[in-house]
Image (tube, rainbow, N blue to C red; front, side, top):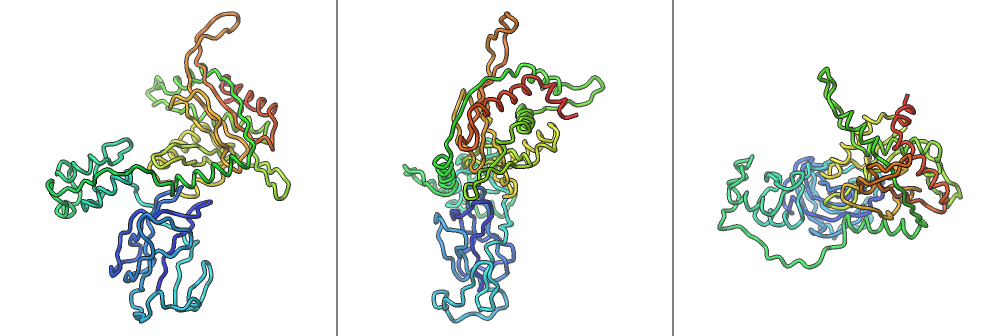
Amino acid sequence: MIEVKLHDIGEGITEGEIIHFHVSPGDTVKIDQPLVEVQTDKVTAELPSPVAGKVIDIKASEGDVVTVGTTIVLIEKEGSKPSSETPEEKPVKEKVAVNQVSSAKTESVSSIEPMTRLTRRVLAAPYTRKVARENKIDIEQVNGSGPAGRVTEEDIIRFVNGEQQDTHDEAAEDSVTTAQIIKPTIEVKEIPFKGRRKQIAQKMTQSLYTIPHVSHFDEVDLTDLLELKKTLKQADPDGTKGMNVSLAAFFLKAIQLSLRDYPIFNAKLDEENEVIRLEGEVNMGLATDTDDGLIVPVVKNIEQKSISTINSEMKELIKKAKTNQLKPSEMKGGTFTISNVGPLGSTGATPIINHPEVGLMAFHKTKKMPVVINDEIVIRSIMNVSMTFDHRVADGATAVAFTNRFIHYIENPAAMTLELI
C-alpha cells in the first residue's frame, strides 16, 4: 500500500490546506496523475500519484489543514496483491517513518520528495472555484476577464451560458445548461483564518515579538533618476529599441552599493551562538502583494548583476508571484527586503522585518513639490522612504548613514553607474 503524504515544498512550510480532491476511493490512477490540490502560505500545488494503481482510501477532507508528513491518500499499487486488511487494521509497526528505508509491507512516499506538479494556476477566488465545481465546470477551460486573467463568478456564468468558447468540446457537452446552473446563496460572513493567511500571521508575529523594530523616514529627490529612466526608454536614432527599466531596479542596485559600506544591514543575528553573521551575498527580497497574500520572491546575487539584469529578473519573479508559479527556491535565502508601496499611494509606514533579516527599506509615494535649491524655488519629484531595522544589531545613527548613502546614489545616478565600471 502506498501512503501519499503532504510534502515539505518550501522553507518553513509546516502545513497546508486541502483545497480539492481530484480522485475518490475506487478510482484508478496513473503515475503523475493529480490526486489533490493543496495550498500553503507559499504556493498552491497538486500532489501527483507516485504510482499507477487504485485509490483505496482518502484520509482527509476538503478544507482540512494538515501538517507535513500527514498521509492524505492510500493507493494500492498496480500489480500488487490486494490486502485483506483495512488500513485501520494494519499493525502500527508496519508504518514507515519519513526518510526511513524499511522492508515492512507498507510503502511510504518520503516527505522530502518534492511536490513536483505546480499547476498552471488559474487565478480565482475560493467562492468562484466552488461555483465552478458545483456546476461541473473545469475552471482551467474558462477564460478569465479579471486582472491578470483572473476568473470571476461572472466568467463561470458566461461559460455555462455558452458565451465563452470551450477549448475542449467534450467538457462543454458535460456542462450544465443555463436553466441548470447552481448558484449558491451567499451566506459566508467569516473569513477562514488558515492556509497562507495564517502562515503570514505567524511569521509576522514571530518577527514583531523577536525583533525590536525601529523605523526612520526621509525624502529622496528622484528628478534626475526619472530623467535617466526617460532617456533609456527612448529609441536611439538608429532605430534601436529603448529599455524600459523600472525604478525599483535602480533602488535595488543603490541598496546593494550602500550595503558594501554598511554590511551590518546585510546580516543575520544568531542569538544561540552569540554572533552576527555578515552575509557575503546580497539577495534582495521583493515584498509582493498578491490575491492570496504577501509573498517575498528573492533576486539572488545583486552584487554580481547589472541594473538591466536585475530589472528583468525582478519583473519575472513578481509576475510568477502574482500567478502563483514561484518555485520554493525562488523564495529562499533573502538577506535584505524592499517594499515598493508607492504605486499604491502610501506616504509612509513602519513595515515588519522579514525575520531573520536585519533591515527593510520601503518606498512610498512620489509627488512633485517645490524645493529650494541654490536659493531658488524649483519643482522636483520627491519620494518618501522609510528604513526599518533591528535595533539589537544596529543603531539609529548607522541606519541614517546607510539611508543617506542610498539617497546619494539615487539623487546622483551617474555616481551609481560609475560604481559599475
